[in-house]
Amino acid sequence: MDKIIIKNLRAYGIIGIDPDERVNKQTIIVNVAIFADTRAAARSDDIADAVNYGTISKRILERIETGSDLLVERLVEDLARIIIVENETVSRLLIRVEKPDVLPFTDTVGVEIERTREDFE
Image 1 (spheres, rainbow, N blue to C red):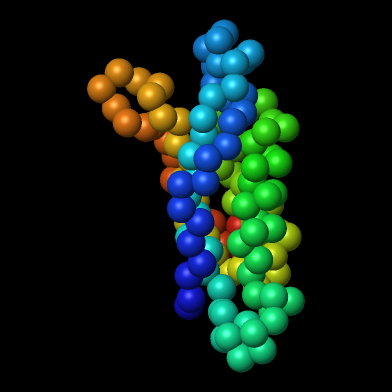
Image 2: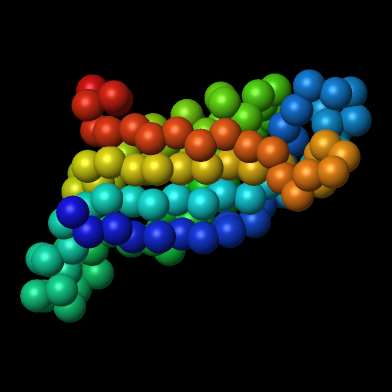
């Protein structure tokens, strides 16, 4: 299976349980590995046959910027659902959502999940 990668997509949104996290937007970093068969797009050279990573990136940004989640677990699950449900050729994905500079002595903390199309049917 082929892999489409979105690496270190940065968004700003409300996420967290602390009082300041409920009012102040913070940086959220998203990494996605999307598994799909890219042969049709390679043959046709037509975006209609491809997994459009530009559209997926915009949907990720939209969800983060308009959301207000308490837990990273909720956000990462919603993002996985959006990507798989809205892109019929995606069979599986691995997605990680991180919050940088949240805990002392760490670069980031986050949650990484793997989901398949069957998880959302």
